[in-house]
Image 1: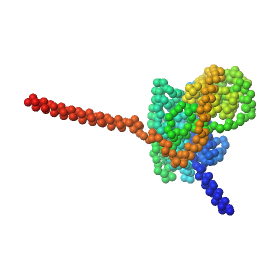
Image 2: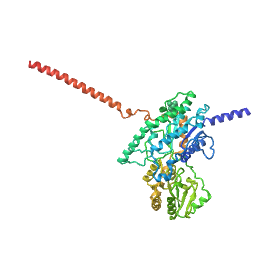
Image 3: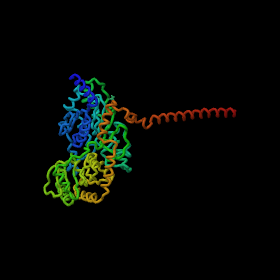
Image 4: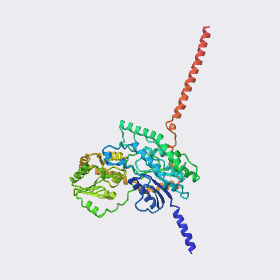
Length: 520
Ligand SMILES: *[C@@H]1O[C@H](CO)[C@@H](O)[C@H](O)[C@H]1NC(C)=O
């Protein structure tokens, strides 16, 4: 009997295990919003019964079932000098791509060259069915799929942009698709089109002459020895980086701009949001329930510190909020003295549950993509104060879509904010617009979480989903623009011209000969 029980359990467990895959998730960027996104991926995969090894720049607070954490938090640092509010306001800090890229290249080095990751790579007992790697300005994590000889999925934290599309398809036309650090929204004007063209061209040059070299160096130093050690053929890095099966993208057309996407680009924006909002802490619940005129929620996100606002700006903001009849919740790291009675400071804010409350009228945000997603998910109009990275383009899009206003980060922002708040609270169009978009956002065939799990499993079950790949990525540019045809045509034209010329000439000679004969 016990023998039969054993057989039965082993049959059952093998049935169960046959659906459990081993997945490696690499989340290199040490920003809070990036770790929220990564943990969203973990939660869905773990609930589907898979085992995930998580290379984590920020370690989860609580252990997640089926998840093994490879802690790299000691090796990676947030480039905090790039996001200091005060230095940004004082204009003492440049924040364009030329500042971001070297930081990102350093990050790539540190993520791959550390004891934790090198131990994982050299451990020959480690096998994975798929690698999911977050793409933040670095292709180098494709190396993981080389070492584990398995398919690769890119995870993109932002709206579709040319740098990631070129890895799985081709560079989109800059006359109607904008760069991730741009503040433009199509349709573009003449000068905006020029700007996007320039950004793409310069970006390509930087990639060719700087980034590729760094990636190549990291690949050869920190991945290739492990590929050799496992006895796999060593592919050229370019082959690996253009070989991804899929992009899972934290985006959705309700938040972004409709873009032509290849079949292996899957938008799953909103998957990190719990379908049912958690209850608010009691004290906070009472504050918002009692808000007779509704409430406004103000948060600069998880990376920026409101603390860094200059003192006079903080005071102006407090005074201005105090003049409103609405209740204000301000996510701030420390209590503020002389706080008006309608302003409440939250050191920690359960943002999703706050936005889910029916009395939430307005969300003042830095315009990060998670906050933008959540405002659409819960249908709350926004005032955007963009500071960094994709926040400018996110806010520009929200404004263009008609549910938001933009206020510049400046010493006079309290005054500008007040004007924007008054207008948005008194005009129902903003609320109406966000409710429309919220409907579009929710009106999908399946939830984004289900979509995520489906496509990861699809890649594994089909051995890399090669059928989803377009030939755009592998067709050489000269073939795309038919340069070869142009050359063939040119040769034909030249040949015809030559032949024709020769015939005319020999004809002419004959005529001349005849003429001469007659003369004689
Ligand atoms: C490219 O991907 C496919 C499918 O995932 C895989 O079979 C192949 O080995 C990969 N090629 C390289 C060079 O890694």
